[in-house]
Image (cartoon, rainbow, N blue to C red; front, side):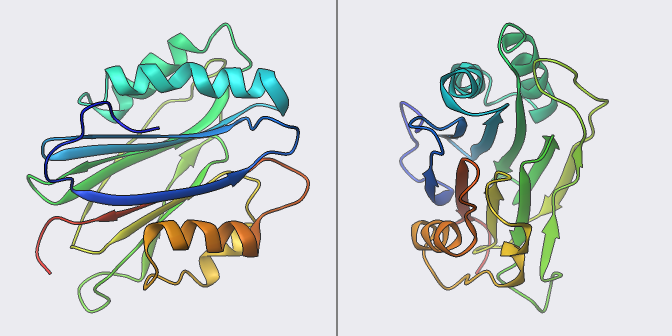
Length: 206
């Protein structure tokens, strides 16, 4: 899902891939871009089918409306907005071009990894630290982590329909769209909804 009015010079390039187990997927990505920033979120509605999709979909307009706020505030807004649904697992990241940083947090089993473009200045990757709970049902104490970014650093988020071993080989030379499709094909499970969203940072210094 795109922002209605993206900036003239977006700070991320992104792509996604997914498939449903039962006709409609309960997994959903939301991407919002604005001047000097972008928000990327991935949701996994509990269970499968229409009710799971309804839970994930309820979060999309909330994220879009509050994208400029802190991600912990966005998570709180989503928690309040999803209380009449099944609830969802959710990870969210906010990119800030003003200081070349990304802040992220997660609730439930939506995994994320930041793959570094410059191995000499940063570790190979960083994994998101998620907290157990369900957005819309039981929100745990939240903590956001802030990371410095270099141009080309790439965020990959996946739902639990993707095998956790996807981090063993992330072909960062691919475009974000190619990378998302590759991960889905190689690591997607046949027993669950599966969804991948990839965002590459375009700001900072090469």
